[in-house]
Length: 296
Image (cartoon, rainbow, N blue to C red; front, side, top):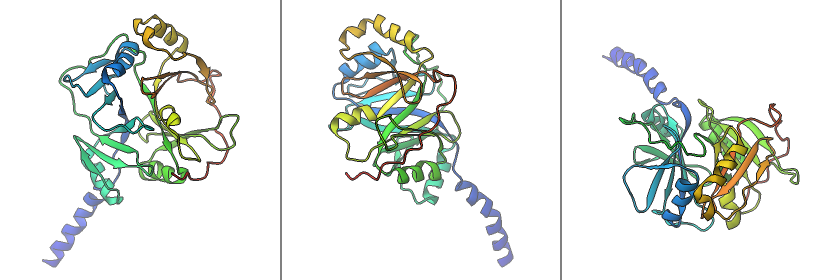
C-alpha cells in the first residue's frame, strides 16, 4: 500500500509542476479608461477615431472594437479620481486556469473579474488576464477607424526595480528599449514586450508624486498607423474634428518614430505612432539611470 501511495505521488509531481508553469501571455486584449461623460467621450472615440461600439447598449459603459481581438473600454461606473483616468489593462493568456495556479504558486493574490483574473501591480495598477472565448459572429469593425491595432499601453510606475521584478521576473516580459528626453538625466521610459507576442507595455517612470495634469498624458494607449501624415489627413477630413479643440501636431519621438498625440475630453492621451523609425534602424537604448523610487 505504501509503495502504491509513493508511486501515485511521483506520478502527480509532473502534473503539479505543469500547473505551476506560467501560461503563454500573447498580447493585449483591451485597455479600459474612466470617463466623466459617456456621450462626450464617444464623440472622440467613435465619431473622431472611428471605432464601432459593440455589445448591448449601456448608459454607463461602452466597448469599442479595434480589431477582431482588441478593444477599448470606457466607463463611468467607477468613481473617477481626478488624477487618473486609467482603469486597467487586460492581457491575453492561453490558459486561464493555469494562470490561476501560477499566481497562487507565486504567492500573488488574484480575484475573479468576470471571465478574467485580476491582480494588482506594485503601483496599484489593475492588470487582468483573460482567455478569450471564440465568438460566434465576426467582430464589428468600421472601415473608418483610425488604426486597426493597439501598439502599446503606457502607465506610470514609481519604483523601477519593483516593476521590473513584477513584469519581467514573474510574468516573463522582455525589455526591448529604454528612453530619456534630451533635457533629462534620469531614465523616463522602459518598454517591456509580452513574452509570447509583439505587444508591449511602456513603463512611465517618475521621481516625484505625479500631478493631476501629468497622469492623463502618461497613462495612455498607443495605436499603430502605417502613415502618420495620412492619419492626420483622415482626422482633419472627419466631421467630428470640428468639436476637437486641441492642436494636432506630428512629431518625432525620442525613439525616432513619428507620432501624433490626441486627447479625449478627460485628458487621456491616445498616441498614434508609426511602428518603424524614420531611419529604418533601431534606436539605441538610453544608458541613463532610473530615477529613485518615488514617494507618494
